[in-house]
Length: 109
Length: 113
Image (tube, rainbow over all chains, first blue to last red; front, top):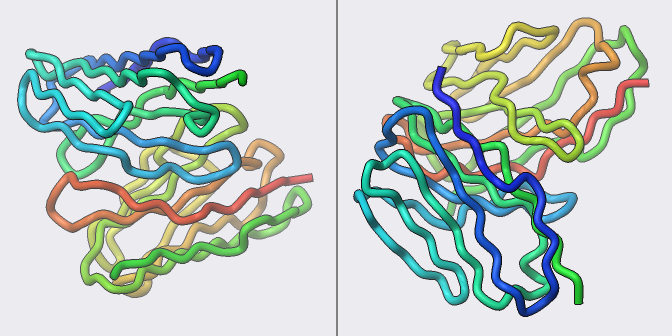
């Protein structure tokens, strides 16, 4: 079945450093979504990418969808302690999303 | 606006006891509904999803079952809990017919003792 992998599994950074998580699907995706889950909380939708090569920005966050629509990345510039949490990508498969394995980000002040 | 309610927030149950978790959505009709489980520090495992009343698709063989008795109500059940059923259970809804953004409930943290 379809699999969506993310790397790294964990990332510890000093506040102010940049952070990137990568998402790879075993199959071509119609769209990809990103979610953030704060410690103890539930996943919250961040963004959806649909077009091949699409790049979207939300303040310090930059999201990219690969040309082949099989991979994606999330880059955070100058991390802050509020960025702490687990970031999930999710690929569309017919009527449901397949969530990636997640990247847990820890930011040290 | 649409809201999703999930309860209880936390639950401690003995092994062998039954389970019933409820999820309801307000402000929309004919939603797609989903149950996920998340083990501590792990990813999201899709358990069940439903595209309509009485329509349940199971993703993983297990000790759990799901039902959708009403359009905006989704129930997760077990007749006899196992220790391995412990985890964080999340309900989510999405727009029917599209792979659209998921909105998650606040989750139920289940500990089986």
